[in-house]
Each structure stands twice: as C-alpha cells, then as structure tokens.
Length: 269
Ligand code: AMP
Ligand code: MG
Image (cartoon, rainbow, N blue to C red):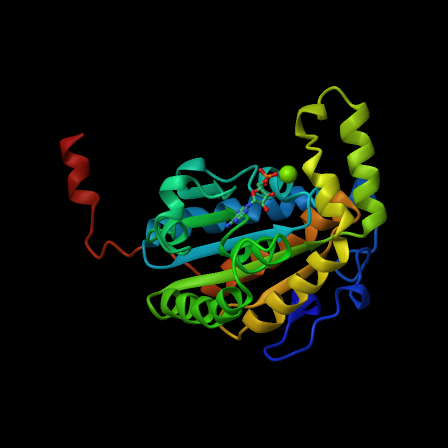
C-alpha cells in the first residue's frame, strides 16, 4: 500500500508530476487523520521496543525536503510515543571546518544506527549532491561521481544489517510561500525564518532538478526513496508513519527467547 509513494529503481523522477497533496493512504478529514497518526505512532513505539530488545536490526530513516517541508515536525510527531533512548535523531546543517577536513560521508557514517536503534537523519549526505550543486560549492565532476559513492555506501550499510528508508517530503512552491508567510507573522515560529530560504526559493527549479537526479540515481530496491505528498501537514505525518510502521513490521522484531525457565528465581524474592 505504502508502495504508492515508492520510487522504483531506475525510474525517471519528475517531481512536478508527483502529488504534493493526495489521499491514497487516507481519504478522511484532518480530525480523523490525526487519530490514525496517533495510533500509528503507538504502533511504531511498540515495534521499536521489540527492535531494541531483539538487538539485531538497525534502521536508518533519511528525511529530506525543501525548506519548510516539515522535516522536524514530522520527526517530532511520528516518534512522539517512541522511547528517546532507542532513537538517534540528528540534523545535518552546513558542515563545520572540522567536517570539511574529511570526506563528505565521514560525519554521516559516524551517526549510522547501532544495533537495535533507529537513526533519523534530518538532512543527510544528500545535501552533498543537491545544495552543493545548486550553490556551486563543488565541481560538477565531484558531485556526479558521488551518486555511485552513495549507492555503494548505503549498500554496505544494508549488507551489514541496516534497513534504510529515504523520505522526500514533497511540497509545492505555493505551500512553501504559505509556510514562509506564517514564519514571518507568527511569533512562535518567527525564529525559524531565515532570509536565505528566500534565496533557495528563487532557484526552486534548480533544487527540483537536483533532487530529481539524486532520487533517480539512488533509489534502489534495498534503499528506496519515497516521495511523500507534504502540502497537508497531518497527511504528510500520517504517510511517513505508515511507511515506517510497515517497514518495521516487515522486520518483525521479536522479544528474545531467554530459553531458560526463570521461575526458580522466584524463590529468591
Ligand atoms: P536547517 O535544516 O534549516 O537548519 O538548514 C541547514 C542548512 O545547511 C540548509 O540550508 C542545508 O542546505 C545546509 N547544508 C546541510 N548539509 C550541507 C552540506 N553538506 N553542504 C552545504 N550545505 C549544507
Ligand atoms: Mg531552514
């Protein structure tokens, strides 16, 4: 079902042809949708407890999207019932001097999930084939060869036991304008307003092309991309929760069988 938003390996990606508003996973209203979201978040929390107890699988969730697409509030709400000790959420902003001393995957790899853990990336190594391309921070010959590095890097993680889910929160330019207006007006979100978002917005088409190429080049059977309609906030969270719930359910984590009869210990209590 959640496959509706999955990008097949080798498929061409035209973001303008993919929905930013949709009802394939839920066709009710916001109020009912928020109830479903809460149920899914609880299911994710229950699956995470098993994942942690089983201590076998690793899960990596990559969240990307244009500015204001809702990456951080999606993380907040999808994992609202999940024990923080079992997740590792990290935001990747502009690389520091220290990070720029190394290769671009160095800082990323350092945050890959432990066994039993879910790592959540708010931005990721995909910035190293998109923003660096649009802003001309590295040569074309540099970012083009990175697709292959990324495919290989992710395949290595998968081969070593990591399940990878990559989510592109897909908003329209109109929805971004609406979100930016809100940031300007609302005192509680004004702090998020960054004039550089307007510069990025001015080259929206270039970002769109960069993302289309990045997604098409790196959506593989083992590390798929999902392009999630994100104009409606509650639907975007519900869709992400569905994709993650289904992914975790497929892993079918189970509490370990301790194998021995523990009842003799009752005598010591
Ligand atoms: P925010 O997510 O709003 O805190 O913004 C983080 C900023 O860091 C965004 O403008 C990203 O494009 C930028 N950024 C993240 N990773 C990189 C990178 N590897 N190279 C250049 N800029 C980056
Ligand atoms: Mg920002």
